[in-house]
Image (cartoon, rainbow, N blue to C red; front, side, top):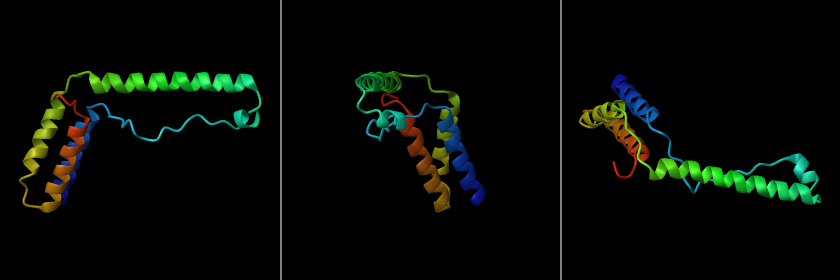
Length: 116
């Protein structure tokens, strides 16, 4: 039973390894913080430079997320094999194996493009 559960978890992780991660747009994004910038707050040049850096960072971040999220990407055969094995594990007599398979299917489908 434990071996089957670990194999199901392995297939889920292998399938996720072949797909790009999907970053949630609502997650907390920590800005760049520097002690030197905080100590020299009165300087006008530092504030404008910091504002320019933040604008460039946000432009780069949104561009990377939208290309993976909006575009289609090829799905490797290994992902389909892992999904097949997870679907077969849903019929296992052990509850813990079925739960692990359901969680793995959820994680895989979360990373797939919406159209697939």
